[in-house]
Image (cartoon, rainbow, N blue to C red; front, top):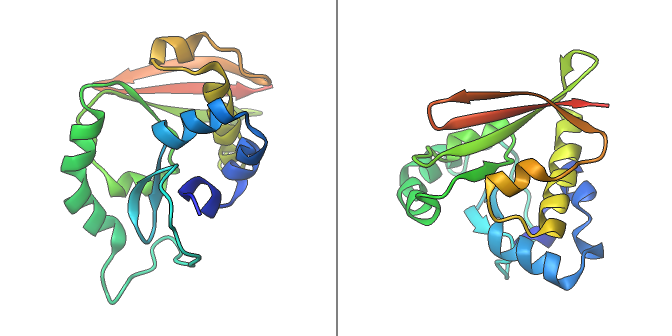
Length: 169
């Protein structure tokens, strides 16, 4: 099974990968990196993943996977992503898996003046679907797409990190 099909949860539910056009699936398969608690960083189209359960923060024989992946995969990810500016849609926990050296953008979602966490997963799935549908290849292109029920409240730039804060309408 492909990585994108193996994993489930709110973001995957809202992405609705199974209902996408083949060209959009190809985009996801080749442009999305998924951080697996068991296998580390995977391309969404990577095949052969077995069914397993390993929760966040769960150790494997006393080893903390996030520390292992950070130490062993950061150089390869930096080589893969550098010097591109990329969109990071990971949940906060997965920041422990990788230390970026390229410019990147994250998203924050606010509703009624409060940062949302559970529904942020849903909006990450929605955003990713819109990106695939539009075949986005740059942050500049991403900034031009209209995402239903989201309005940019502010853009915060710090060093190589840009955070786009959306208000959920």
